[in-house]
Image (cartoon, rainbow, N blue to C red; front, side, top):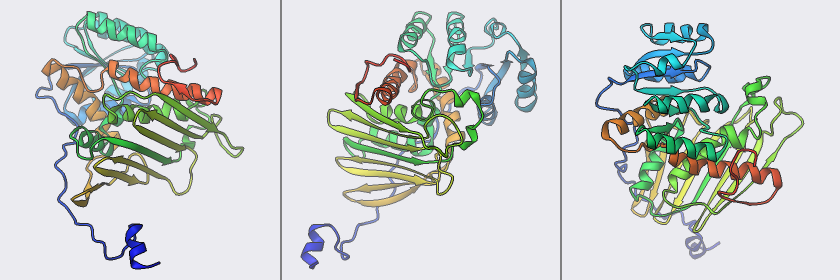
Length: 373
């Protein structure tokens, strides 16, 4: 191949790309000016540990913990907030005037009445994800929150994972122009769920319970653009140690963009998590051994390139951001970034993917109204 050929194909060894200063992108989790809001945690299961660890780290005031198992509530209290009260009836938390924010962590079906009752009691609510299993339920809750003048947010904590938060803010600020493609390539080990009914019984575990984070961040990165259709497939192999298919993929079609997702949830050797966003004026890429370990953001612009070190990790920054953003929105009397209304668009993508995997055909976004239909 001649030097001219190399130049045509972008292979010339003499072609230099300038190093540029890191763009000033503020991606850290938001913090409210005041930490005086009283928080009531409902549900003391496994995920509550990460919620409470975050709230203690941020200095937020958890005043009550409720669980159907009083022993579970006491365990969480003793470990994180010794001065909090514990209850085996969550309605007693809703009766307290000194509690203004409810963090509802149970699974979706159990969580519905809790959220309804919390809203009608005049409490702001942070709902665990996935928000709802049926879009109609979600829309009803959004309308109910408007009627009672409270904020309803969803703990899509991935929005504040350092690499996703950097992408979200950089794109919103126009750093790489209009997004044309997003590629999510994940090979990670989820074999820890084997024998756990809460996960083994989930219909399309990878696309739904895990994948909802990636459908949500797609919704964020694409801004006001709305997807047209989703085509998804899943595959199970004989050597899997858990029941749901461990391999899944999805292609999301937008009017002028395409998003591609590739998941392998049974990768026991050589885990990797790569996100690449190509825009009309640049490219952003994050790469690491897992979703909680993304050490830097690669930035490629016409003016040059740079590697930006990222501080924090998903399981710290994510939970800090989910509650921090809700408290900031309360202070500033605005909708939170992770409002339930916004999250419904994420669920439309997720539900369409699940439906597509079932029927083997592309599904128009918005026509699949629940996780099963």
